[in-house]
Length: 257
Image (cartoon, rainbow, N blue to C red; front, side, top):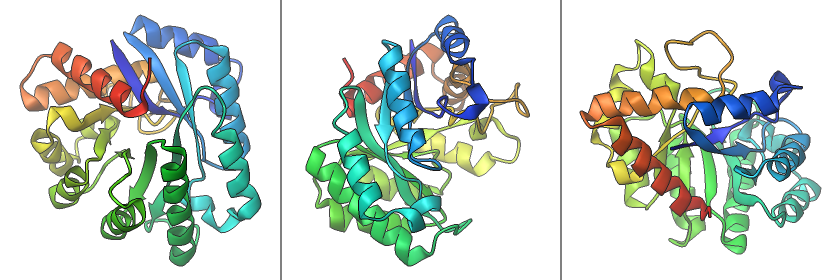
């Protein structure tokens, strides 16, 4: 069985379709889904929690995306902390740094990311990190603010092996998406080949980053199978070994039953 470690099926793209989406995932061998909050307004968190409460093998995380860091005041951060006490919340995030789009100023992103790192430490929950073109500063903050007492995952990893190695040395997992099936992702596939299987997770980041052969369509958790199959091909190992390892990894990180 597989776990989609990062999906946003609480979004409007799945309105009225969540149950069949989850059923299709089960049919594809994806028995657990982690629905990640933090994108957009606070409703992405509350909707993730509500969805997790409605399905037995769905879990939630709560956070604020770096795009929205400019809107993350004390009130919002306190709300996230309260939501994190919900029974099926298993992580803090997504949160992090995005220097590609810079929808929020870099300084504000760093401050908010630091506060979420401290929140994850306080709550003893793993952190789900969004990082784009900011690997050096993200790793520095995770190291200094995390104090070596933080576990987590760099979701949708797209960096080079030097960045990957630094995160791995800190004990973090790296999660890969359908990007590794794209024609222009040769350098990222080389990173996948080098990352130890015991530090890999698979995700869809639904509704985004749909893997080949469904690229161009809305993504959904069932398609995480294509990501796992691609990893097996890149590492020249059986699909079943990838499925078993990535499932074991995500269950250990998020302490899933």
